[in-house]
Amino acid sequence: MQSFDLVVIGTGSAGKTVAEAVRKAGKSVAIIDKLPFGGTCSQRGCDPKKVLVGAAEVVARSAQLVGKGIDHTTSIHWPDLIQFKKTFTDPIPENTEEKFTEQGIQIVHGVATFVSDNTIRVGDDELVAKNIVIATGHRPQTLNIPGEELLTDSTGFMELPELPQEIVMVGGGYIAFEFAHVAARAGASVTILHQGKRPLEGFDADVVQLLVEAMRALGIFIVLEAKVTAIEGEPNKLTVQYERDGANHTASANLVVHAAGRVADVEELALDKAHVEVGKKGVLVNDYLQSASNPIVYACGDVAEKGLPLTPLASYEGKIVAENILGGNKKTYSNDPVPSTVFTVPPLASIGLTEEQVKKEGRKAKILFQETADWYSTRRINEAVSGFKTIVDEDSDQILGAHLLGSGSEEVINLFALAMKHKITAKAMGEMLFAYPTHSSDLSSMLPD
Image (cartoon, rainbow, N blue to C red):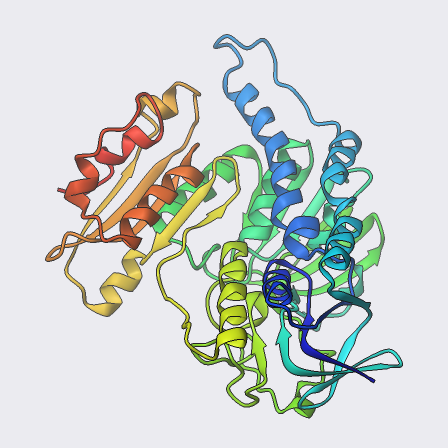
């Protein structure tokens, strides 16, 4: 049995941030992971995904400009793209372990399981700690359907040596939409089966509809209110059974991708033995990100029930936890709006309240929704669809929400985030002078009068 000041479970952005900060303060630290060290974002999530999206953007841009100065559409050679992606991901586990070792953080491989409030077992070893941080992230949720084992998850998709010709995405969230764009631009036939009435349910409905129309024009088949009931067949020759409008339907595919949501990865932790409570979204924590039922345990990143599952938030939460462990509970979680982006082509970016949320809260607000395919910034690259919706409080002139679709949206949304964080009014934002012609220079035309 070994004793530490801190044991961290998970080596992603949240866990890494806590472990390094506490170790830098001179405390003894061990860090555990059942997967290759380095976390989801850098190896199996946002970073490698963006490499694939970058290739899709090149294909899309060339296709948009054929006949307008570009001779022909380029194409993706999938094996080369995956090899390029691996130049980013393959070195991460070894580099992460080396850095931890240099810092004096003890690394432990294996599945962590609580045996008491302050003790964790990994294999035959037991670790006792003054504080324990759970930063295990998310995993694909179990669908409880026959043939579920035939599904490929997002990790598997980004490791495919060859891209299959027919792909079905189960789910209508950002993973399904992003991978659909990559696969379609790489030449695959893609179908999205989504159980809900509309996809990307956390984003503004009108702007999402513009994106859906663009995807359908691209040839991506989107079926809504489709409940998948079974997967049948064998690898590379699969049939998806689904119900819609009271009837049974099928879709054939070479590959079926699980994109139907993710849940907190806590199943193997035996949290009941540590008296740590879990809710629908993850480990229940207070404003200090401390377990509501076991004060020596903290949780941060996607596994915690606060906030959105975004990498910048994971790092931010890791800093909060480290400060509270080292200095006592003083640092609390802030609910400042956080921007998020769906890296489709073009991207969809969002921050703050949607129109639906504003109306539900009964707030008086000015709302401007506009399609912008005729704007110069869209026309110069011949992008077929773009648009935005902005929401401004009538009394305070504060920006309540911004929802953007189009090239450059993933960067412009950060200007809205800055304004909302620092209480810059819509009037002041509209008076800002930006370099022209840029996507940012469109901002003054996006604000309601």
